[in-house]
Image 1 (cartoon, rainbow, N blue to C red):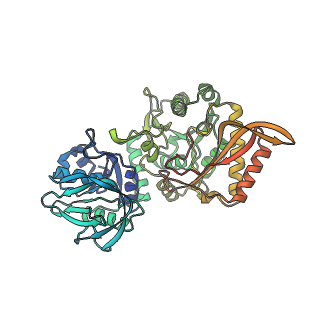
Image 2: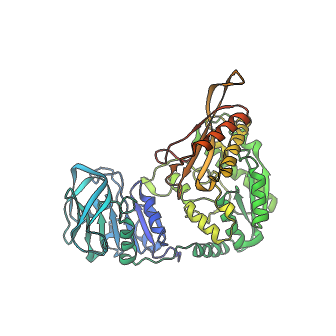
Image 3: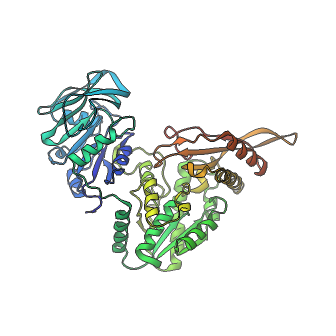
Length: 516
């Protein structure tokens, strides 16, 4: 059993848009949390050793014929349970209570009134604001259950069977609009679940180093790096674990930012003393992407070719069985492979959904369970320079997912130049560190312009800048107009083939951070 995961929280996911937010709120308390399929059997849960279980909300109604459900043996496991929204409805129904469709739903902010004292709502004001999102309601409690709180519409907002250490809320404590949400979660995980604060950057590093040494007692490991914070962190972990047996390889697929390869080599070799080699594979990547338009197809082609290139390169170093890569938790979530039938594909990440089935390597993914902000905390603990830690995320497929439509050498060059102008000005204006991710996009649209008293018909560049914590949600950055003006003017005046610049003001959701 993983010692840093023991006595953490297991979240059974029923397809809620807030599931990963639950995980985040718990990890902020230095308690490990993991979202798994709601279909997970009790035996697998016991093997993981959680201190508590949370049943997430979800879009389904318990009246749906194909509604998601859970292993009912969990109810007799004596592991403390918290049901949220749909999770509450399931608990009520399976314990003999009744749930009915409401004549009107509760969506958004609502007021609740606490009716009885309880461990879950300890030190919560008798009147407090919460976030609701439901169309069903409890009309009859199961035997042995009590009402803890009512909404202003007289709908049961919190209930419990404290003898069985089962609690449930109709509202969402994980959403920031729930005023006392963090306190309610702490009450559950610490006072009810007796969970332990084992999820720290130092503990994580020690565990991963030990795990890697046991997995690879001898031989070499190939590290696929890009120069971003993710690859820098896992390269540092691997180097700490097995020293010069870790061979970092940067594959230049022809879709890196301008000067990316040179800067990456310098940062890792000189700054972190990582054993790194660079290989130019741009011709094969660009040839396979020729005339490919669909973004999912691009990602899968790139993911497959990365492995084929790594397999070719590995032969230069002898028999290498292991490939390490910087897969993150959001990559797994968005690729729709982690949570069973309730999980939805958003986009296949090249390193998750784009890997070939006949891959010869065994993967090592030391940061697979981390959110981006957690990766940065681990990086700081490892002593990685702040300049690398705060570097904006860059996707493994590179500019392939920032060139909408066909990929050609000419279009790659246009985007590289435009992106360099954009980032340079953000740094000069001291805005770069205020932004979570910023990049330029080449849009497959040409527009009419006037330059030097002549008609032009050239490319359109989109600018994207967002603020975020973990990449799961994001808000567009309110860019100062004078900075936008400088960026637009310099791109149009210095990048051949561009005559118009636009700024993206879409949050995530409904958009994604990347365009493809």
